[in-house]
Length: 274
Length: 213
Image (tube, rainbow over all chains, first blue to last red; front, top):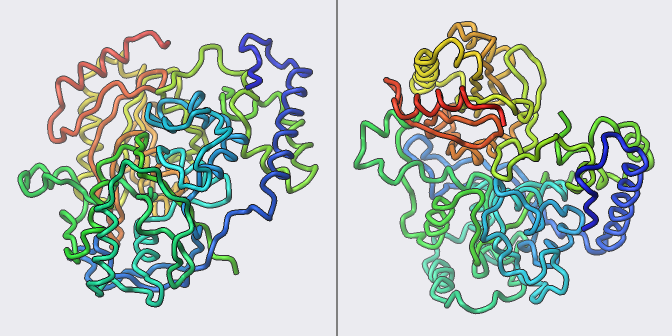
């Protein structure tokens, strides 16, 4: 990148102006490249209720979910490369340690994302902080677990297909697929809301990824646990048949916000358009 | 203090001109690359593993706005809480006070203590002020702070604190007293409440007396 010398004097207005011209040019260029034609596709999900697998004793009733709009597909490698061009501080050769560990985009041959193979495959090896930053840059945010689970409960015709053993078995089948093959492109079959690839392609970050299970040791350390947490005790998992979703919770709960894996991607949500 | 990721004050007027040039240019402000402000970055580069890399707007119990990285230069004890918490959070405050009590007056003046709420929806500045007064927290050293809801989890993630709203106004959260060094690096942590953690106190004393670099 055009990194100016760090020793430049304070308030060198000519240099500042040059830098700003470059910023402006790159912003304009990116607007042209990613104009409305390529804008991310969001679809509206109406509000409703969901009996979350995380529902505990305190909330046996379904939890209300407010309306929101969700990206129809996970963020692709091409989309993430475009983000890096306008936000170079997130390039793997520039990102700070506190936001991403060494696994961040480790499968990218070029740190700026040029010449990406598999451009339409979901981006993986992204930290939670980087996923948040991407979503914020398009006026969105990561979904909460509840929003993700709400969207992912649907199949092609029903908003909640989770009581159908055949559907559960189909989702579970994906987890038997070897993980050492390249990820396919996004764009699987749409569910009833028009959202794709919630199952069968990648795991996905959620905003509250690290708070889904409070403490795996809670049964063995009753007293310590009471001191460790405010409010009610451990969360009792509902719907123990839904292994596929429970696996996601276990995976997300095991991660640090700077970590990434080869099968963990993300998508964003934003407020529903009026 | 100019931050490496945001425009420095010296280019403020320029920025306003650009912003006025059209709404479509919002990328200029949101997408500002790190190198754009490198000319006026702080004398010593912020460590890559510093929590001050996060641009976090905060408001204290007196309604003063500040940025997290304004705390750079002085070690800090930090934790997260919420004011309506009945059981663990009062113990957290006591644990922080007990840790402070183990310090010499000189060590104490070199250290600040900050607690940030999980619950900005309920913890207004007034609610923070009320707790600070009730607990008789020394305003010279203590800050109770809130940030926007969308930023709370970023701070929690940086600090390795887990929390989850559980519906009735309460939160499940892990308990942690975290020591941040002058450059924003996590230098120690403890989950011990009820009595002070001697190993942690030792780290706090060392950080308080360390030169600010």
